[in-house]
Length: 102
Image (cartoon, rainbow, N blue to C red; front, side, top):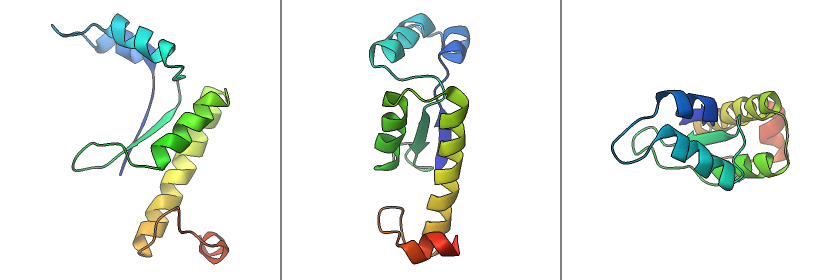
């Protein structure tokens, strides 16, 4: 799993292509209310979103938490997800005993 965070300033500065500009992408992020710092969880091989982690990240953004808070929460849940994967489980099926063991 790869963990990324939305950063509209980086998009504006570094994304330039013949198809879409960084400014257009930053505007789209703003239109969709995806705040800077929102965690995005992607599969390492396919680079496709991992559910329900990405939806959870979106709910953090909807809660209007601070950028640093969202990043901290994203890192924590990524560690929990990795721990669960080592145990042959996922975050959704985590029981209290899994969280206590973590």
